[in-house]
Image 1 (tube, rainbow, N blue to C red):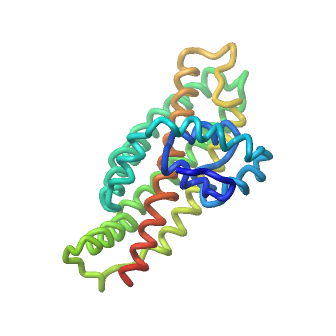
Image 2: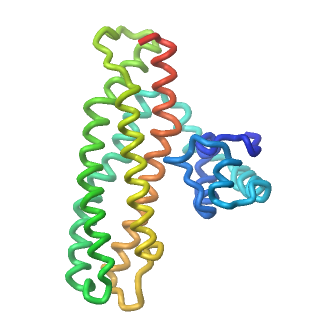
Image 3: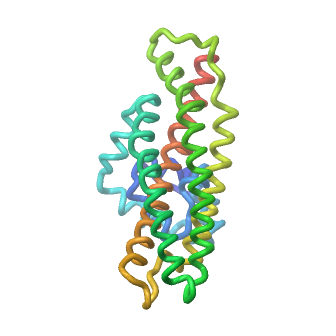
Length: 240
């Protein structure tokens, strides 16, 4: 892939997720804000685009087999992958993190009152993400699967097709909200740093929170930059 200032950020990460850490290190949002040019993204982050391009080219010299696998999937297969890999992760980690944050607030809240804000925001995120995943699984993804099957020539009753444009707009807005929320959590925890008086539970909780955000970034990237544009394109091509 040839990268220049006009290359779309999301397309870079679509080609190779190895570019994601480079972009994150420069505070460039590739998931929720991945639909703009590299030049515009660098301008927003006060980054020299000419200096960044060689860094991206260097990490992308090594092939990303996961990205190649993702690109080989039909949209219904990608929806299945997102559910099995990312939805299941969110559902598994929410109760774990809620319990750990409650424990930290009880043990360390006196010295670190910011933990109460973290616990509150994660509680809000947990509720919103749980509803978000349900909407994807019950409303949007079934429509995506219909489009993929119709595109392969399988028998699909598109008269019952509800369309993907409106639910995608809702999902995009909710992705933005969660991206903003976790940016705030990262900021008030100083990048998920364990303080000097923090215990092992503190360290595990911060590390898991960071992993949760990292997983959310990849989850959103797969939807915002691959699944959703693909579904909208198919809908238009099929005249559904």
